[in-house]
Image 1 (cartoon, rainbow, N blue to C red):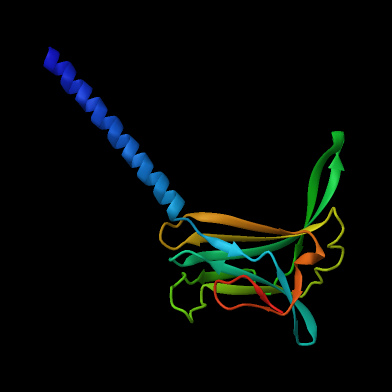
Image 2 (image 1 turned 120 degrees about the vertical axis):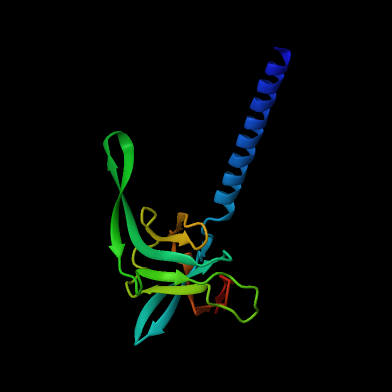
Length: 178
């Protein structure tokens, strides 16, 4: 009888160790193998066909491709509802590209830039941007090429300090060339 309780005890200990290890592996897998997109916190103003184009830079920092990438630019205008609660009206702004099938994974090669993408808008984003109640928000949704996990990335632009005349540096660098 004593040996039966030892076997049952040993079985439960092994079961819980296996459960803990499996859960730890799954959590690690979910954390490591999800999309890793970076969006520049700056907007470059460039000229194209005589018009101003406002350009955003998006970089895939994962080793794997990002699939089903979609881009959304909205203008958020707050309004107050009962008891001083705030909600937002969202106005969709047009982008030059709304979706992209895939963005290449990041490589360690020096002259490789296929993992970086520029998305623009011809709409004048500088109008009312310094209004403290107004902001523009760029959202990027993508799926990881290995795990198929999806994730949403957002950057909010709230003042005219984000605008820079020039272009972005090459590759993973999110800095601006003046």
